[in-house]
Length: 132
Image 1: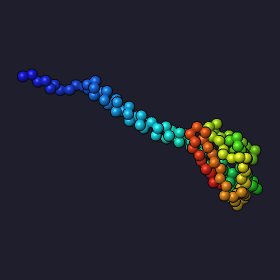
Image 2: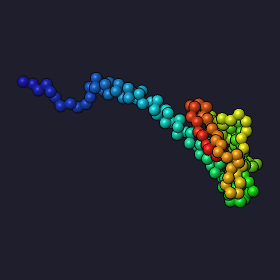
Image 3: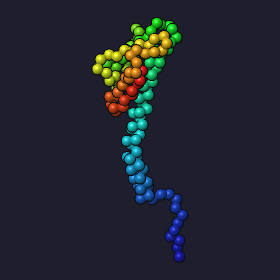
Image 4: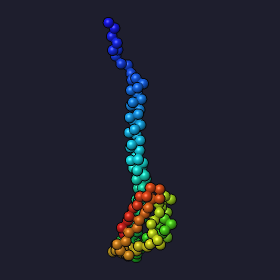
């Protein structure tokens, strides 16, 4: 009698199609999560920029290099410290009705106190709230 069960040397077309179908379903289900993670990762530079600007403004005042140091958030996405202006990336905006200024004094106190600034990302709706 012949041995019909030969040793397999590869995959059948049906097995390959089944594996590809399962991988396609897994990719389709996980794609929204990867997209959300990608957008969140790209928020980092703008968020870090605002944190650095607030920190440097406060540091300049505490170090005594200036009598007081003011940071101004403008509605157009510009952040001003003294004579220097910094622009947020175009897909971010500052959620304020009018320009807001915060002044840090030599002792580190800020006027007005207990305020917050909201930075919005236009394309995915992420918000960052900075308490000053």
